[in-house]
Length: 118
Length: 203
Image (cartoon, rainbow over all chains, first blue to last red):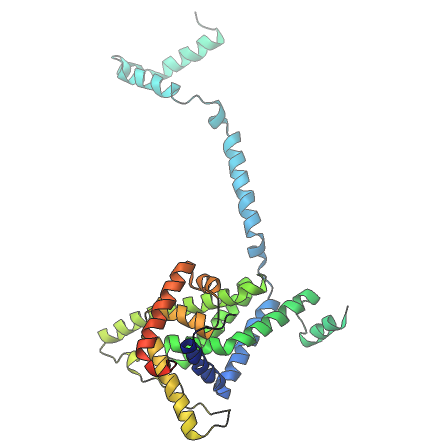
């Protein structure tokens, strides 16, 4: 704690200190009770959840990150390919016809892959 | 278990015994709070001009310091305590402003209309003569009124530097601003007070 250098400030400090010394018993008593109420906080145990909250947050973030990285769609899918194909189909002249017979084309596709057709 | 731990266990039945370190921390905090509490109360009283509110603000600051910063180093307690207290004073003024607007809306009298006498009802423990006591009371009333008239930041800088005796770095930490700002606010505050309280000047 630094003391003021200037005489003017010293006089102000002295006036203030005198008013501190003149605090009445009621206020001093109240300050004493306040101090003990504050110190009682040291004995109050912190909530368990507040202790574990940071660790739980980190663990949750790690789990989410792992789930995202391990997701089959995130790893195996080639973004854009299916979308381009779909657009070609939709923009084609016979797209309506194809949509009407979607089940048939789907069966042809499956059968070709399995070697049953052709 | 040493003697101090035993005393702690007896004085606080039902509480966990956390050892001599906890007891030492409690003693340090008790000593620190006992050292600053009266000046803090007067500073809060000048800030809000209401004894009961000032007592509440000091108690809140004590509790928050112990709850949140008891593990910080002893040197940091004073700036942290006064930072909490100054924030409390500012919040109090904001609430009062809102309350006063509401009161005006409903046609009630503002609480700022109350005359506050900071020294009234205070006995003189020093046992001085009534005229001497009156002179001191009047000097403090003038000082208190002059300090209260300062802009908020100047008032904070002046009270923390002069009344509490914090250094520039501690005051900056308590006010949450740079040391340069503290010096500016403090210099302006002293200049204003000199103009208002000429009879305090050295001859």
